[in-house]
Image (tube, rainbow, N blue to C red):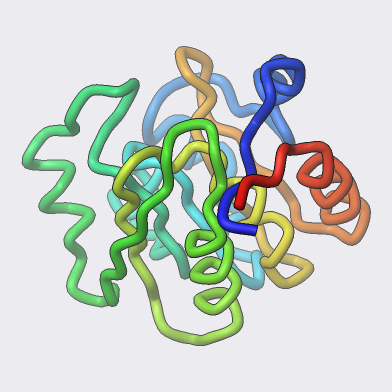
Length: 176
């Protein structure tokens, strides 16, 4: 397998939050979920603005998955600078839009097994990285991502959620 491709018939499923939706913007959402974030085994942030606001709230996720864009537009230099946090090791990975590349899956899996803080910069699109992040995060972790124009979603990593994501990913199209 080189790529998992999201077929059109599964796209609507991902429009619904995979966890608890915290309505609002930026720091409002992070403040509302702060208790869960601070007690989590690991915190994974998918998306530039999600990662930015977590760092602004002095919460350092174990893994940041970003693409230097928000809503398909480049993020500001201020956001890029904030995401350039000195405690992160930066890794580049290619991942075309509407796919999950084997490299992305492998890097997420490896980084979540270690103790180093990792910032993954995706060349392409990072949206679907939420799925392997949930699948490979240790139980008791949380994955946070943005729900466009609504707020932020916090996903508790449980055995049930992992099974749900695994079943979903098996419905994706495998491309060699």
